Image (cartoon, helix red, strand yellow):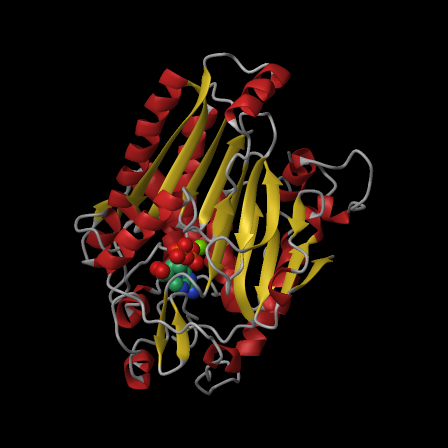
Length: 432
Ligand code: ADP
Ligand code: MG
């Protein structure tokens, strides 16, 4: 992990450069430099007018209105039962080996006879989570419980909607003594906001509440949106310190929905890495984290879903170890109203879903919160500003699915990504 030469500069066909090791080098290491966000800001400035829905949004053949939260929860869980990770935007592929083959692989890779796979699917952070652990049965079962409990505990601190969470109390105007994890997450959210020129803005909560995607039957009025703008700057979050009392400026409310799952994944992976497990795969909605390897010693395989396809239709497959993968898109949570799709990610500058040329953004990083926050921010920015950001940052890799049916992967993924060529009329390319 963390080689000095970014893998994106490597020759894609270089012998000996295959496999997950190369990816690890690609996605970690170098200290990121700050993106000034000039191009992005410039493209927004002077727009002045309310963004119009993109034409492609009107052409969606399967327009459907989002259901209520409870319906969504049971749909997601039912779907997860069919395909353990089938509802995520990234679909971890099932082990294809039959029992006989598994026995042969065990012998081949020298797994202990005690080694087994333990898995669980549960609902947390308003999404379906699943965890697969490979290792000693007793240890894996205990870690499964600890990981699920940790996810619930972090949700109880960072949820905007759970009563008495730290965020709920801050949003209600209370002064809260911050725990170490919350203080660190607030500071990271502030830094991400600066770095992305405001595309990621954790003070977006009033807009998220107003839009209420998933519950609302129609979009809010222009007047209601305009009344909430401009959003308060999140810069003050940089002053968050563990053990210190903290409160929000007047009129400011937080929503950590764009980073909380990623940071929960970070914390759970720390727990898993401290163990002697062979490997683990954690799925938290659109966030997938892999630790170590599969039972057969191979990297984990993570498939990228076709935004227009059925659950099982994929555009590409990543083979990774010890990395976090986050996807943001317009096809998981949205409101379809009068032929227009409004997704749950909002442009903090306009107050509307972004006028983006992207359907989804997948970010691969050694930091789960960074992957999570960046996938949200890059979705807002659109393709070209995102690619400029990626070139400048140098510490993550990405896959973009555009509304004109292109799948563009950054070249640091060349050794660990296979495109599903021919799928869904898409064109596939790596970019430098
Ligand atoms: P998901 O949470 O569905 O995995 P994302 O990681 O992209 O998807 O986060 C979207 C969530 O982040 C929204 O539901 C909302 O709570 C919050 N959010 C929406 N727009 C922004 C934004 N521009 N900056 C920061 N957070 C946002
Ligand atoms: Mg996110």
